[in-house]
Image (cartoon, rainbow, N blue to C red; front, side, top):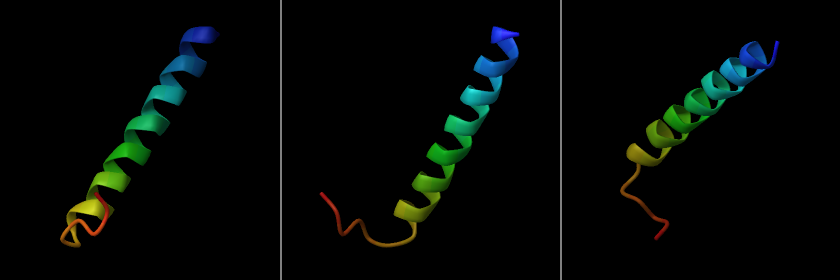
Length: 32
């Protein structure tokens, strides 16, 4: 049970992180 929840959480986090990297990779890093 917990393993499924943890796996889903990890997948969600990885997806969000990849999305954030893709969004921050397009512009020339305005944020420091």
